[in-house]
Image 1 (tube, chains in turn yellow, purple, cyan, blue):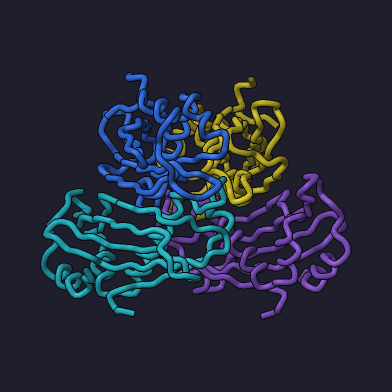
Image 2 (cartoon, rainbow over the protein chains, first blue to last red):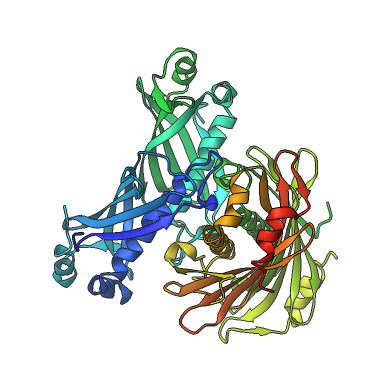
Length: 139
Length: 139
Length: 139
Length: 139
């Protein structure tokens, strides 16, 4: 697997489902968030910028395609990669796949800004943090 | 308020927040879902088609803009309207606003297909259900 | 209704259910938490002690009986009351009922301590906060 | 580790927390549920009785002690064991511990009945299912 990609797995449980027996739409966002935390865990240089507390990545848009319904007992994998960096926005692409047959269950693009926590304003992504991110882009 | 629009309100509570003290991204999807259920509750003719159980609306895409962070104690309103009907897809537009100042917290478009539950396939939106929906469109 | 009792209502939705079509066990805790926030909203004198930020009520035990399964469309009411104050612990009793027939769906006792936020230690419940609470007890 | 005990691990993430930066009370119930599903996954003989669909274990009581607050980044382990079988009720004991120092974060007893799905009534726990369970009890 490309080192710019992270892979997290989970098993669908009863509490992930809604009344139709399918994974609830909101749960997919938790699966995606889990994938993004794992991505940062595996990239300590990037995580270090954020752990100082003066800067934070904040999601401004999420666009998710629901392709297939996942059900109880399905093993899913969440693939996460940084797909694009602009001057003020960056994008993460994620896919949730079913392990048994490799079919895509959902795919999502999350657009982030880099927030200056003190002012509450988005700042330009440049300098060291841009360098660290540039090496991770997998378009 | 235009009769083609539904309004649902809720107060942000501690269990809606994430570790940053902001409403968690996945919670907004529950707020939106609550708004859609309320929309159907108020439109019994439309709800009747779905309660027969042979047809179901299934989300295939969600596109959500996170505009401002909501915090504990905020009163929010969810505005829901049917914004578009194509031959095979329909779209619902929703806005989550802060009651105190009317600012938009998040806005979302949810694209649906009409699923034939028996075959698991999307069907054309026509006949009586199309008529019922056509009267509700607010572009 | 006794003024020492709070009542909050909600309608069961698809996203509250688990894969069996019943309200998920963890959701009941959110319904209970909603009831407790509403209880404090309606008792500003009590809420004022906590809004200063140096003291907080923290749950140390929850004991919940699941009596009946609630399903989509059920209207539920959450009844909340302070049931007991000891020197170091207080207890809130809550019942979740089905509005249509008044049957109890779940009932719970939540035991709290009063935490000194600075030291992280439980303190004796006395003085003004005890007085404010004593008037609210409904055994 | 005793073969009658199951161990599941997870890392606390931002979406598990509430507005105080602590794991939300309702999330612990999801962690416990995850532990119970893992327990059944590892005990196929027991799972087989339930997968036939005519019998189901249904929780009738949960008693949970919140001992310490878990925060973002904590690695937790959920230990699950069958602690008791009566004629009509069984009990599972679970502990959630912090991996770094072995301290208990929460502990819980969940009491179940065996439900005849067709009649919706609790039945006596006997015959083959009792035998299968008896070997697993760790008081």
